[in-house]
Length: 226
Image (cartoon, rainbow, N blue to C red; front, side):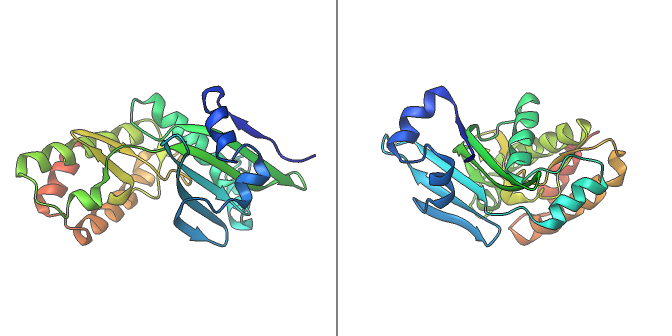
């Protein structure tokens, strides 16, 4: 039986008009601008016929490493896109801005995840890595970095492990900070001390390479209270 594509009711018309209303169509589409390409999956930014902007993210296959990692940790194996859909819902429930999943589908093989896809709305704003490159008053930078630190604190307090916590995945919209790229985010029962330091160090290293300074990092860390 062919895989189904589940579409939110209000998006059925626009996705039909764009020819993105079946799982096979979504997996074969090359519409829009390719924002990320790997043999294991791609992401496209698509301008819809009605002017809306959406992102199509798909897994052409689920790696054995991903499946084994889930199994070793006693989790049901999921394709990265499906895990990201669940993570987006968890983060939205915390009041943190994230893209909205408007369509999703998957296809298994031998009772294991194989292919999957999600279509998401665009999250307004600019990546922190771009924000830091431009000239902003020190107070604006303080507000943004403190807001980002508060977002990270919410995630950690909720037991969410996010290996991809880097500046380009924080989206700045005025004084509001959202996040994206959550394919590897997992809810975990592990003590936060087991994973938070490594993720904060990675963020700090990337921040320094993307135009951040000591004050930016301090403001982020000061708001990162668990």
